[in-house]
Image (cartoon, rainbow, N blue to C red; front, side, top):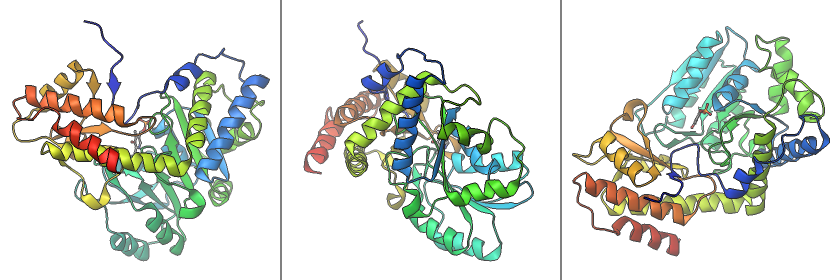
Length: 381
Ligand SMILES: *Cc1c(COP(=O)(O)O)cnc(C)c1O
């Protein structure tokens, strides 16, 4: 049978737009060659604008490297940090802190809910923390944190504010000045829609002052000080950047700015509303509380009798990939990424595959019910 490329609707990597895929195919310039220097510079300048960042570092790696860089450059071993965790990725900050000899107090809550602001404030009153870490959107539970409100608390208690933006950046407002964020750690394969392979860290002058106060850090490749001169002038060498991927990210950044940030955030809200109208029309429920939903993904509970492996095998057969549950939701639900450079077409195709896969697994669905509801919401949004 003739097959088109499958639709990858997992919470990262996300579908790669044709112009981004083509951008990778540029000649692999020398990394200090003028043509590439201009590409790197444009990419970094666009990102600074998107985040309202004082500084930005983009290097080969992934989101987890960015998280590690965020901590190792600002918090010395032996200091205390407060980790607000809404799932697997929130907890990851605590694991990284452990590895670095940083003491992490973790605030958690039931899966799919958010830690109340009052609980965070109580902690901040009790102890002086060097930094507070928050996952903007935790991809395991679908929970979106109140990043702006937590920023006010961080500022009131004079604590450095580190945000994991991996599943939010370029889809949800995450402007550093407006929200009082000192460090955003993120990556390229989620809402930027670039193939994986880059770690990105945006930070404030205040965060850089923390790095300076540390003197030296127990890292070399991850040391901001080694990278900042390269980000200022990419004609200098420290370690070879992934030339072709930077060209792809430059194209992704162009797409974001050409669409417009406000328009992009609104498109994500509209997509999420349409997806959820479709899911709810066939009786599917989300694992995330209504107030804490993120526009970038949906974490869906399996209805009685539908089994994880069988359901996702059917989805694959219909050429649509969704992700299984992780953490507390392992085996109990599936996750649909709906972020980046997608639109109503991808939503409709995904919902159609969900209808068919549920139906093949013995769950009664009237054909087109989810698709129709999504379409109606999209039209009337
Ligand atoms: C995907 C993800 C990460 C990890 O990113 P990698 O690129 O896989 O290292 C971290 N945090 C969040 C919120 C994520 O969604």
